[in-house]
Amino acid sequence: QSVLTQPPSASGTPGQRVTISCSGSSSNIGYNYVYWYQQLPGTAPKLLIYRNDQRPAGVPARFSGSKSGTSASLAINGLRSEDEADYYCTSWDDSLSGSWVFGGGTKLTVL
Amino acid sequence: EVQLVESGGVGVKPGGSLRLSCAASGFTFDDYTMYWVRQVPGKGLEWVSLVSWDADSTYYADSVKGRFTISRDNSKNSLYLQMDSLRTEDTALYYCVKDGGRRVTAAYMDVWGNGTTVTVS
Image 1 (cartoon, helix red, strand yellow):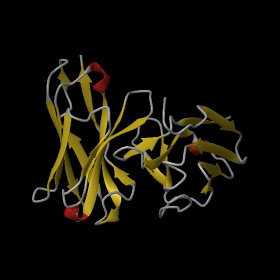
Image 2: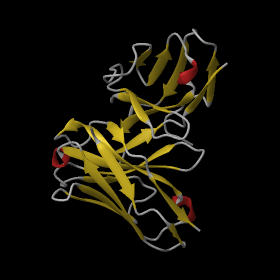
Image 3: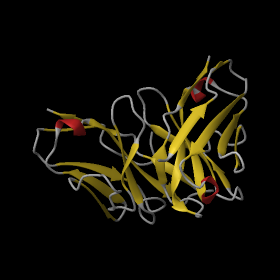
């Protein structure tokens, strides 16, 4: 079981808005930033959102992140077929000696 | 352009050892913390270890603590992962990852290599 909890799957039709949740605790999301990665089939993960809601250069504005308390969300507006991928959230966890923890990943299907 | 090229992944028997390498280019290597992250095929991501930009700090996941050792050679722009007492559950694709913050211990995992496959069987 992953420390951060994500739904295993999500889906939407082209043009729709889709959100993916990521739930944690006070030792991780509650006091630390959340990051999101997109992993297209057969490729390495790519940073999508950093520090809760910041987009790296080159990431379309359709992607946005937010955080509230011990949960975070990734929203994709205007869904496109090329958004079909696995999405992972991560955060630093302050418990014990410290570690990065990931969500189990959400497979997004564009119908 | 940042490039991270992993190597050293092969098949090994349980209890064996392996050393992974990551050759970095396109950035000032000794300014950035580096990570290893692994992924079992068809499964999720698992952070393995990190070494700070100055090599003063190292962190390990509980699942590998005491068996794996992360190191770096800033003169060679290279990152390493010494893997001892390997178990079948260590079988995965291992990614080398560059941090997103300059001269900080652990900002975030930014740029990823394409990975090298380790099979313990």
